[in-house]
Image (tube, rainbow, N blue to C red; front, side, top):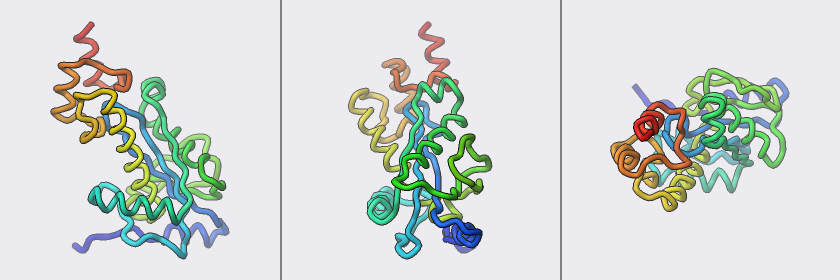
Length: 208
């Protein structure tokens, strides 16, 4: 089977309905045991779409870095996050949706339509929107958002790793790798760990 790449067709459908500023929205960081969830909203210029956009997970780190610089230079970008405290208080799905709404609110100019990765729309959306299952592989705008969110979250986890060495966050981004598990067992839980996540909760419970 030939690999498929995201395109601009979902955006063109929204344009045909009279919308003019279409944002792709995606989040990164639902699965990690530590750190915030980060979302991006991207409004691409139809005349200046960076070539090679794809789901961030399908791109090399070098390609992501190159594309993120192009997206930031050529498109309008909004970033949003939900903290570990918010994740623990409301659950990861609601926190991911909160980060998405914040990313839309952070755009330099409001979007009038959003294509949102996933099968559910966040509450409190500031504009009409369409959920798109596996959207980062279907819409170039969502793919762009996935790239920006991934780069920014990874950079944030590298910074946190410098404050809390020993968990491997600079390479595992807070996911539950062997190095992270070893760090939790030897060093314990930091304020940046998601206490509502079972592996972290279990280590806390053992400590107590």
